[in-house]
Amino acid sequence: MRILLSNDDGYYAPGLAALAAALEGLGEISVFAPERNRSGASNSLTLDRPLYLRRASNGFGYVSGTPTDCVHLAVTGVLEQHPDIIVSGINFGPNMGDDTLYSGTVAAAMEGYLFGIPAIAFSQVHKGWGEIDAAARVVRAVVQQVLAQGLPAQPFLLNVNIPNRADADTLPRRVTHLGRRHASEPVIQQTNPRGEPIYWIGPAGDAREAGEGTDFHATASGCVSITPLQVDLTDHASRGDWASRLAGA
Ligand code: MN
Image (cartoon, rainbow, N blue to C red):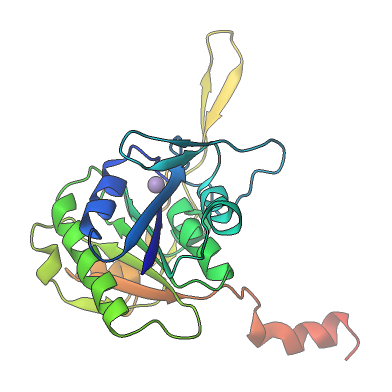
């Protein structure tokens, strides 16, 4: 079993170390992670400069690019064989609802999924790495169960969010759908020492669709949330309407 690990918080992040330790013994593990924090990088590829792959003293590979670059490079150019599964995380903070569109953690997993490789993204619901050991036990249990059931012919993409609790590994698991967030807070304008305006992207908005069945609801109710994701963004329900409005059907 070949297991490829990545994240978006950087190769030195405690969540990645916890992930690697959690999966020890389940297969041959390779790590390709960004050289710095690339949270929010989404599915971006670096096209305007070459990428460097270097090796940290613990054996982790780190890449001068995005999470997507890391997995892309590992799968298409460096690893001799495709990994059997890709595991991303454990992220510093939640990836629920609309976060999944911006998330580098989910993107690293999604890049594998796009190459036909099953992939799972793991995140902790709160920042700060609280109870990371318990989150790591959840990771091991979920990955072990998935492997024990046999990997299906069709790849899958799972997005898992884990409450920061010491008993995380004994919490019920819920299969959920993505909730929605309110639009994020406005940018914050400041002035740099040269008197020029600078802007910081504001924090994510609060959950607005967080009812029963959503990832927000499950984690708020003390459950581990598991959302199966797909990539097709087509709005199938409105295709007929648009066809009559714009395509003369
Ligand atoms: Mn992150």
